[in-house]
Image (cartoon, rainbow, N blue to C red):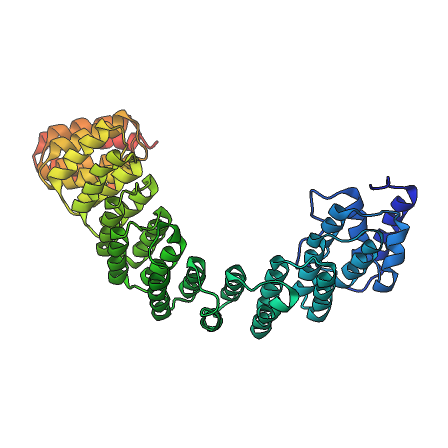
Amino acid sequence: MHRNLTDEALKYRQMAAENLSSLPPVPPIRFPTYITAVDISPQARILCEVLAAAPVHEVEARLASTLIQPDPETTQQVLKLSYNNPSTAAKFFRWAGLAQKHTGYSWNLMVDLLGKNKLFEPMWDAIRSMKQEGLLSLTTFVSVFENYCIARRFDEAVMTFDVMERYGIPPDIVAVNSLLSAMCREDNQTVKALEFFERVKAKIPPDADSFAILLEGWEKEGNVAKAKNTFGEMVIRVGWSPDYMFAYDAFLNTLVRASNADEAVKFLQVMKGKNCLPGLRFFSNALDIFVKQKDSVHAVMLWDIMVGGGLVPSLVMYNVMIGLLTADNNIENAIRLLDDMAFHGAFPDSSTYNMIFECLIKNKMVREVGKFFMEMVKNEQQPTPANLTAAIKLLFDGDDPEIAIEIWKYMSTNNISPRDEGANAVLLGFCSMGRLSDLRRFAEKMIDERIIINESTMTKVKNCFYKEGKSSREIYDQISRKWKSSYV
């Protein structure tokens, strides 16, 4: 049990804080510390302060002066938060072990702390002590693998694997995969991992995780040739299974990122036949890659395999796909996907509709623009002001002024803003058609509503009226006076 904090312990905290200012500069903090820790006991915090502030030769005396007898949980808290102080942490570990034997977890923390700080000789001393105590486990060696690899001492990581058995820990497939994973996490070391894999695979048969680790390494490095070799061997050794999804995802991502989309599609079709299609995570990532590559052809192939395999895309995926198709003017497939959405429970939003609406306008599909506008209104999906303005211009140019007027009325009735450009488009449309009565009526109403009519638009309105004779000129002059007064 912990003793209550005494006055002497509290005094020590003040003394430790004062001593901090007299210490030489410390190296930059690389690991979590007690300073920012939230769930830390008062006893553990005091002990951490000792380790952070005290010179190495005074640590044990200062620890004793706190009158704290740390239990295993406190010891573990202190070690976790003292990775930046390996020398004083080692002194603390020795001091705490005098009163109570350390648990295997505490020993593993100490081994990891020393390894993270590249203190490999003291780390091995700790491992030998653990062996004597009968506390070694695979976890200990996994920590050693990781820390040697972080230090880029890969040969020593492999040597550690080779001596495990001497320490009573059998080198099984979990150990193999742990070392493969530690190697592959480091940049451009999958070849080194493959060398180790080739050496041990006869003695310790690899499992699906072994191949998944290597494939994730090849994915990170973008090595298509090696990924194909590893994937081929995986199929021969462990066959096909929906449980191997991480391996499949990594392999397919490697192909897609390397612009080997044809091969990715080919393998996807094989996987579909084996009931081993990857999940939505892969398809979503692959779709993003195709968008960056502006490759709508392979995106459609990928999409059809995905949906045909029973996977249900999200609204976000639909919008990404429709965005790619409309950017490529592939309106037929974009509308096909829109029609499929409700069936798959992904209901289109205004973004979905506006991408297709914009594409129809851009491709001057006059008849379809009018129909699609009506569908949007019916489904309560509001077009953007920019799309509405562009549609008005197109419809006037395409001899369908009545729908253009309907669009303007929709903008006006629903108070869609900004609508000044739409208003100008309507007036210019009437000018081009010579519809002076409509031109007068709409212009006066727009001025009353304080809509901004551009000077260039008014010039064209003037030309339109003036060429019709004196009475028409008077009508324009009246409109012009009203227009000018609206800006006063």
